[in-house]
Length: 115
Image 1: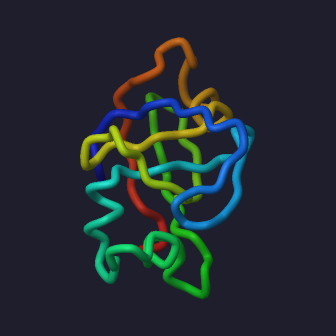
Image 2: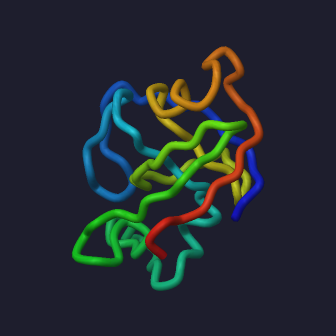
């Protein structure tokens, strides 16, 4: 379980580090580049082949994120350049399901579901 900060990121629509396209309406997340790059089996220069992107035939890891009495599940699809090692970055839709978006950054608990 990580006790960390939740941050909000807006991409519009984009290609995540895992090589999949997602948009701001999806329940997706990015972990810090420090966690992403140090993930067991990660290889430099092979970002979208990182095992964090899908250890089981490209089924992405999911995480449960909890803030107060609310919790959601998100797919890990990207890496966050500015996040600290335990932080998690959510799309606007996922963030809004947990907290008021005007916060921009808030404390959460989170853990990987299928690791």
